[in-house]
Image (cartoon, rainbow, N blue to C red; front, top):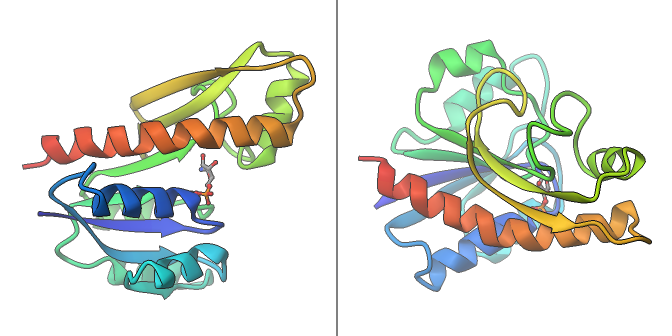
Length: 189
Ligand code: GRF
């Protein structure tokens, strides 16, 4: 059984989807051992409603240290599911298990600092792209630049807005995130 620790900052619909995939047996040999939020957010309430252990670690001077200390020792995989804090060098010095993230664009396009939430979709539309999508990738010190595990695209329609695009992208996130998690779980010893 692999233990997954999920870090989030927002609504937590990906958390909910992953938890449901585990309950339905679509992701096997996995257990969410802890959900960590870096701010008060709906994702924490979802975690509670799902019966998952959860904690809030507020950002501040000792954030990295607190986060490192909070990650249970038996964790095999860390999943960032809409986690907005940037993991720094000291974090990577302490944590050596795989970390994966989902990003709402076809990386390497529209990734990096400032590219989160609707900023991503607005930039995609401004650039007159004909498609966008979502990417699951390994997390490294460089923002959104780790190796890509899975990607899927969506077509952009004529009257697309950042909101409609966000909705389309979320839908494919619910497909590719569990798929990527399955791959990684099979890969971890
Ligand atoms: C997703 O769009 C994901 O790509 C990004 O943060 C969002 C999280 O959504 N990293 P939710 O909180 O899981 O609904």
